[in-house]
Image 1 (spheres, one colour):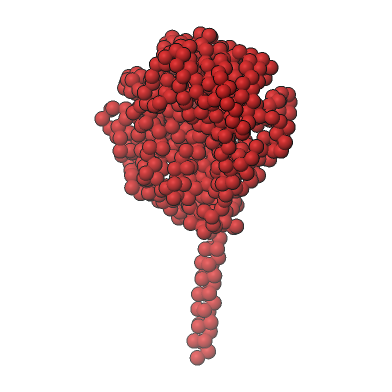
Image 2: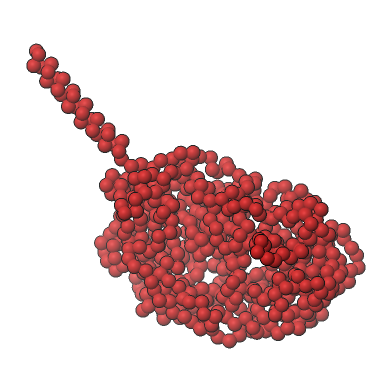
Length: 606
């Protein structure tokens, strides 16, 4: 009896010890930590030397380089070691790009010549070759320091026709949407991945939960939207930063041939050459089919009209299948990818009832939301943590004197308290006219003379000049908060059958010097082709001397103009930084009674 009792006690002690060891081992296993609705940095995931890094090729459903085989996209993976040692499955942060493997140089000869008459092409440009860079298995190191320690796996892929990915770059073509879709399908177990570009040994994403979020800036921000428009299952959330959402809006404006800021003479075929870093043996064929046929026949630098080619590269037209939650980010003073790109997609997603937020800062190109904002977004939709982010304010706007990680929340953008007010012009050329809520009558006309050699900044500062018309409010007696999309109606006549039309909204006196901020002088801008006064899809040669009525939007803005400043509507023709440069001398005559600025102002008072 005593022997049995002793054996029972020993068995219990042994069993308890074994179980304690198992529980201790389980307790030691690494796992994501979520606090206050955000994924936290976990020490066990934070040692880069222990990360597993490898690459592979994902098979797509298209053959864009015409070699008779389905294109494969080059993909890299960075994941915590516990995805192997402990069988841990984690969600994915995914970024794709055409830039990872190198780009062409920016020699001025690769851009289109802009010094020629409207309706002409100018001299031919050069076609550069890209020298591919980069080594396997690492395509990029972006995102990994932020997200891997927080319990995510980071994935990159090179776009079609770039780096070690098959295919042809199309700059907004369907294959640039279907390529990231294929990668997401592989991450969710629906597509095949291979260890080699031409091999047949498969790779499985056994470490993936099947929950994917995408982010990136500029072109890398366009691709998340492109993927989302396919409606692919598993893409739960996207955070595009300064994305190009329409190549027409990037290279044209209301019918006008207009360059993106900082890249005068760039067009879609220039960008194609810039990113074409793929297989050298496929480049001649890709050039002939894509650049020298499809793009040459579709881009239309003669009229600048919107056509089927551009419609096929406008993601607003493809949003019906989209279901991913959207956090959009942009700068109000981004004159490269202008802020309308984000707003038009945000607005449509909002209309569709998708979870949406928009973050705007006051600087230029790029600038993601604060990490904590992105973290809340990804934690909610990739981890499924009910942190209430979908009930947060819809708009987060960095005020003029604040840092980008300290945005001010608003119910929405435009500010719901903003009301449109109409401002009418009164004559003053060649000096400065008036701009007020009172509508004067019988103001007659005023004329400006086009001359591209004068910059917009110099025209805004000039006391008197015949090369622009400018109309100013009285000095503001209190701060004025503009929020939304200003709009202009202009009735004008041209002395020639074609003319550029540029409009700036400025804050005067113009400030210069070390302490000048990016928000100090230019409020917003817009451009249009008078030949497209009645249709964006069909130009009409102007009859010299005949008046035409135009209505178009300026870029979205949310800005507080301080008291003491004057808001100015400046109308001129060729914009040295953005438009073509025709021979100076074209006259634009503006009918003042037919010219109105509609300005969205919080509180509705100026």
